[in-house]
Amino acid sequence: MRSAIFVLSCAAILGACTPNPPVTTVTDADAKRFGTNPGMGALYVVRTNDEMSAYGLDLGLDTRSIATLGQNTYTRVDLPSGPHTLTCRGARAPLVVQIMSGQPTFIDAALMQGRCVMTPLDQAAGRNRVLGSQLMPPRS
Image (cartoon, rainbow, N blue to C red; front, side, top):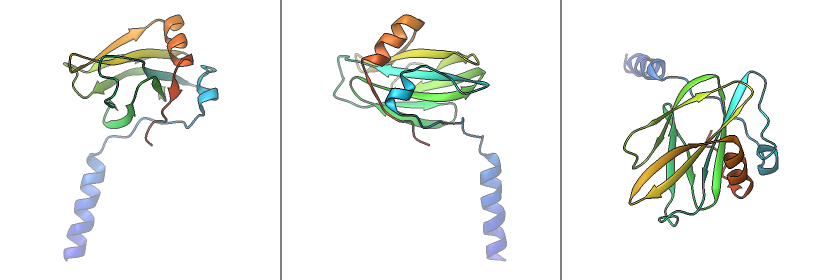
């Protein structure tokens, strides 16, 4: 009886979980080609020097933790088209990012006055920032 209750409890917990966004493992060189997988878009979150660059910057995407960025690092996550919620420990509010199939989307993340600030970047600025940074692979 106990094992049946345990199994049912586990099934209920797993059933309540939302699916994780897909993550594609790429190397730094591959990520810096800025291509996308078929039917997907790519989200790049980049962190360069900020006033608190000695501290890790914890990022979340939709329902899970994806990476901790240090000074001059970035992460890339392949996502289906549509809105996705990017969070950062210490941010005043999450940032809803619209992902477009076939396109990279760039976000700058920084710690300013003890708070995480996330700012969209245009294509040129985003690419330049990524090219000057090192890949921090997302957690799977």
